[in-house]
Amino acid sequence: MDDYQEELLEFHATEQDPAEPAEDATEM
Image (spheres, helix red, strand yellow):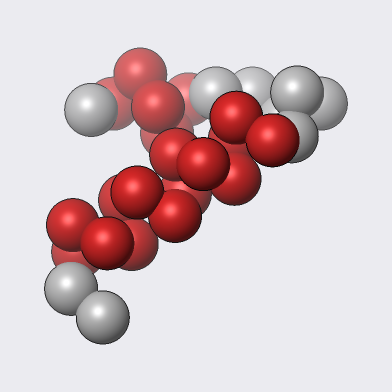
């Protein structure tokens, strides 16, 4: 799995988990 797909998975994970801070999403 390349970094691009990994970033997408992390982004969707933060979207579905409102309890988690969306720090990964802001890095993009």
